[in-house]
Picture 1 (spheres, rainbow, N blue to C red):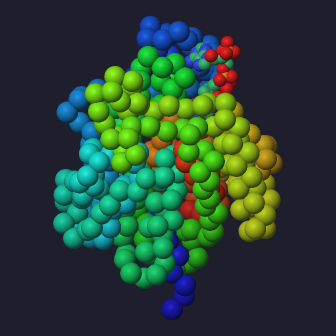
Picture 2 (cartoon, helix red, strand yellow; picture 1 turned 30 degrees about the vertical axis):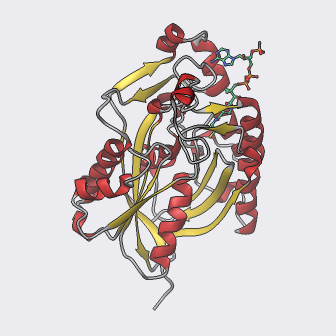
Length: 332
Ligand code: COA
């Protein structure tokens, strides 16, 4: 039998209806539409306003979208990996609730946290299960209700993040399509540059941590920017070299939507002169953390052709980063 590769065979997505524009943010903090757009490329982001709904809601809706589009029987799903930094609760994995809510009655599931690289790392994990022959249908979801961990009085973070969810189904492929190669990295040099200080075992929540707003995301934007530009660009160029790909061989760059300038720098390092190859939706959703990559796949799915070469690239807190080379497996 020919070698098993792990291919994406369906995608789905969900973003909440409520839109938080740059203009609206001008009313909340000392900022401007012009500043945000020129520094980040973001025009608006989506917010899940209902306080009774957590990240699992975004994941469930994204999974349902995939299931409907692919006409998939959820009972056939073997495993659900939910990449997220904002699970419904610290204990009781959100993926388990997702499995039950979508009718994945024969699946097991767990959450995976690698900041903004959660989906890329999740794809790696899911692909390994498929390549080993152990499972046939792995649903990898990236979802985050970032608005639940953002301080809307902090202009250095609240302008960047938004809420959303996306999903991709991995299945065995025998034509050599799907995941070809990956370069995943991490370095705790970034541990203090992008973090939520309180709420974990190092600093359990208390009245004091809440009063000091230590349960919200904090970041040193300049440092994160510097490392994101160099590391994401470098690893993307390396994976091309390692697979003997030059710019014309790459059909699509699927890069984490953190900042348009970071994405542009990555594309430049890869010598991608054709802007149309660089997937972009940061202007509409901002940085949705674990959801950016599957949201891109869903938005651009109709343009992908069977056999297209996709390079995924991500960078996130920790630091975590990586690049993945994948051959698209279907025409939609
Ligand atoms: N509106 C207006 N001014 C702002 C502002 C805002 N929302 N946030 C910061 N500023 C000010 C700063 O206070 C600073 O003023 P000063 O020069 O008087 O001190 C000035 O704008 C420049 O700030 P700086 O931090 O140098 O801006 P920048 O060009 O680095 O852009 C980020 C800031 C956050 C957009 C940028 O650093 C970035 O995108 N970093 C990466 C963040 C990220 O992607 N995080 C997720 C990673 S997965």
